[in-house]
Length: 400
Image (tube, rainbow, N blue to C red; front, side, top):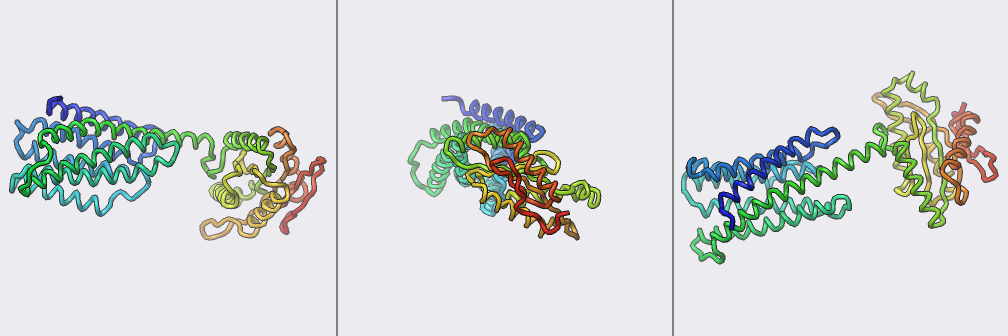
């Protein structure tokens, strides 16, 4: 078995390295900061605590045991705070805050007032158990998401194993303090817990790094496939989504319709309300459209004030009714902006896909239908028929 000081020193060196990695990752462009600072701080505290513990012979009881144990408690608290922040939860909970305070006060008392090593083990181990159980509770639900499955399972398993070990040692130490006979060899159990700590601190840090990497990758992929202003698919993301939907429709024999949508007189909106007002209108339209469609359909911003909406498994008449409701809702309600409303309208060109029709051909027909809607006065829905003729099926009251 490794020498105790060697295990502690190895754990501290790994924690110091991981702290530097976490702090460095916070500077990566596009990396969401959630959790990284706290995980870096946690590992930095573990590193200092390990150094103090190894040097307790030279530093004495106060620094060697008291301060190192206090830093370990602070590091565990920072660990769970980072997890909560990463998953978008409030940083602090009463349970963790109260138990951290009680453990710290108790640790100081049983170090400087009544020197009791068994009670220190009970307090530190009990708090570590609570924190690790909370980490497992936060991470394991993430295993249901395919993209986070592996790191979430690793973190959950390591945290649960650590909670069991720390609970066992803390319970036995408390039992011995009360005068009971130990069930397990205390020295052996100490070595097992410290060996776990040397492994687990690194394993947990690596697991958190994997979660952060998944978050970064998802963020970068979203930047590529989604429009930053409206949240709709970008042109590239929309075309990729259309390709996938058309392949699925061919395989399952389902109908597909495509709508080209243009915000009418958008330059006038920018001139009257400024570019900020124009951005609000784009955001409003994208949000309104997204709320009105299901996950099966694809909606994207093709450029400027032009959008595309691909209806999957929807026949032409149903798509026409949806386009009609979308146009009328936009005309009636407008876009809220500060202390006024920006009223605007949209023109829509709608076509149904022919069996086996390519995406470029479908896009060309939808563009022609949109041109017919604009030529008819805008604020209208124009449907391209199978024979190539356009029929104006809806013309808004304010079309001009």
